[in-house]
Length: 503
Image 1: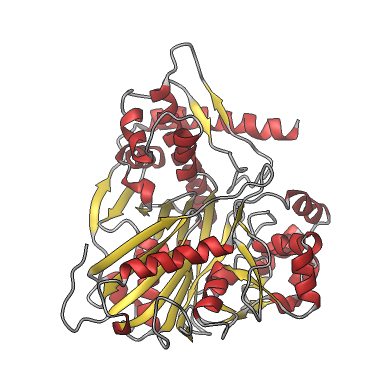
Image 2 (image 1 turned 90 degrees about the vertical axis):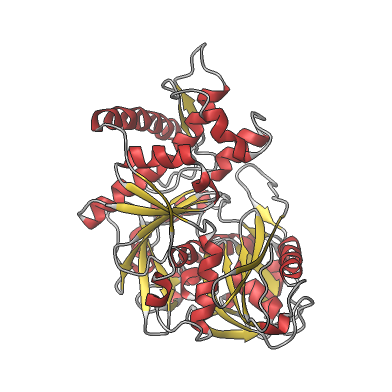
């Protein structure tokens, strides 16, 4: 769909996600001009291992940019924003820009044993105090340590002084700029276990504890401002500035206009990610949540967030589609789940790649309880959707304990937030209102906002706040007694998963 105006200028957002890449072109009045998405192959070389081919990723970036710019003059693009899957770690030759093996994806659990060793050495409090993170295979630093020890091409490139490592944003900026920069920004850097939140830099002591060389990491720049300009990129003219970069969940926080302290959002994508803006100072958790950078508008203007991560949300629906083959398209799960009035006591714990916050158990596996002779596809489909909501409820409970006050409402977005049954159950089980915006793909919108701020199209966050528009409000309808009983069934099931992992 195209809405072209003569003389209009544009902002381009590249949203590089876990299963595909989306490009969004908007004009400076925030009219959507064009949008395109392309999926790419996932690689699972061993149980618990997840990898991406960096050339596949870059090809999808080329394809989506080509699609959204084919009806416009690309010379009228004022700025480019990038948002990306965060903890996924890339390795490339800093001279040729060629990948040095596949990217190790955030879902990957190959460093679980190494993480347990670090915990046994008593290092988790050290990392949490300095980085805001817990020791878990989720984060990038242990992936770097593993690759340097196990991949000969990565090790040889380091010894030759040619190794560049970084999150996906760093790789894309290197490619878009023709190798002119090796850069990142704080929302991505703060996911590595090697970035000190208070010192605001990659830290030698953190790197030493992981046995990772400090010099492989990129330069950390503010999230908004000019990182580089395009050079030698096939689909765009030289000289277009990249002016905004954010990790995907922080981009969604900005896209949801959660710019004030205390505002929160949950994005339902491959995983589910709940972030709350905690303002200018990092809020460290006592209930196994993580502290992260939301964005940095300048070197001195940092905003922080408290976060809980669910590793499997939309991925559970994909499993129902591809593994169980109950449905042909992910959108069909709502109708299947709605074919029954309840799950009839069936509970699904979607620990398909371990459990995230607040449990942080990388060895956990999925579990379904309450199955009887009368259980059929509708009950299982409903239990899968409810399992997504239960995990989010656990995060909210931990967040409320950290903050000492209840959450009154939450903004929701991402593909699965279009599922009305899921959103209503989420509101019911939380006992809070959910606000869904008119534009669900707020990750791309956040990249547009970051690029616009960096290019001076918008001057402050109040301009962003005024753009948010509500599509639907979900109000809790479940009684407190039913909520308590329903949550008890869930926690009993989670307890079985945790017990089994220790047996």
